[in-house]
Every structure is written in C-alpha cells, then in structure tokens.
Picture 1 (cartoon, helix red, strand yellow):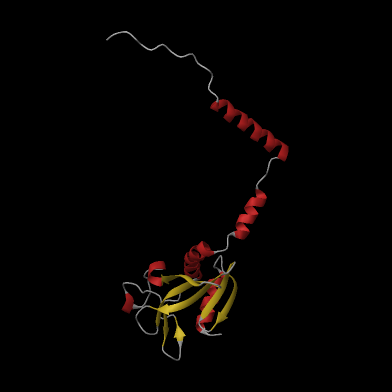
Picture 2 (cartoon, one colour):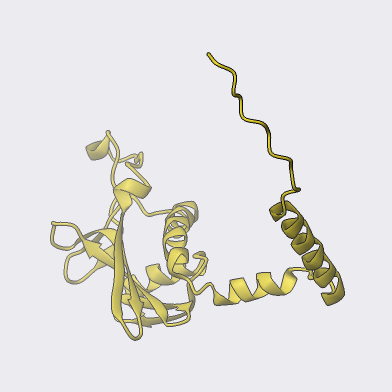
Length: 180
C-alpha cells in the first residue's frame, strides 16, 4: 500500500456517501449508487511534488465525467500553528514527495482534520448520490387512506366544485334611467 492509498483509506473510512471503495495506484473509486461513481485523488496546485488538495471527480458509467471539485487544504483547514520557528505564521498542510519518500511535512493532519475534509467531500458527493432508494423508502413510509375514504373525499370535492360553478339565477337589476 502506497502513502496516497493509506491517506485515502483514512479519509474514506469517515466519509459518508462513498461506498465500496476500490484503491488503484494513487486514486480511490467509490460507488454513489445508480451509475454514479466518485474518483478521489490528491493533486498538486502549481508546485511540483506538493499535493495541496483533494480532487473529487464524479463519473457516470454511461455518460463519463459529470463534475469535478477540488478541495484545497488551505480552504478546509487553513494555516495550522506549528512549533517550527520557520513557520511562526502557521503552515498550510500538504503532502510532499521527493521521489523516495512521501509524507506530510511539518504538520500531519489529525483525525479531526480528516473528519473535517471528509464532511466537505460527503456534502459534495451526496449531491450526486442515487436518490431512487431514498425516494422509494420515503414513498413506502407514507400512510395512505383506504380507497373508499379517498373516493368519498374526491366525490365531496367534486360536488363542492360543481356547486361553486353554478350561479343562482338572479333577477336582472333595473338600469338606472335617471338623468344626470
């Protein structure tokens, strides 16, 4: 297991909405239900070997790429206070790779940090989750009135509607013929 897979496993273990994760190389693929999947991978943002974000790509099995969102660690976690005097203003977490070793330099995200990132990812992927199971369950939970009761209610409403449409015959009023 490589470092990226190890960190993705931590993330997915606390991420709601991503099921049946499959890890391949530096990426994780998860099932969102129906034909939708998500691909999660750490990405650089302009500096080689500095992985400063997590990219989530929504894939549809028949239509291909649906949407992409990049979760920058600076946006999610901000600068973290560290004891290193070189970073007295704080340090933005990122993964660094020097070709031989891959790790979080200076600041290693905590379980709470991973949960915060997972909550953001969960909110995003749930937009694309298959709702048919949710909708089916909701419709099963609805309590329906018996058919006879619904028919009676329908008849009563129809009678009210018909009564409102009929206007009682009213005598014509005389035209005002007085001179002005």
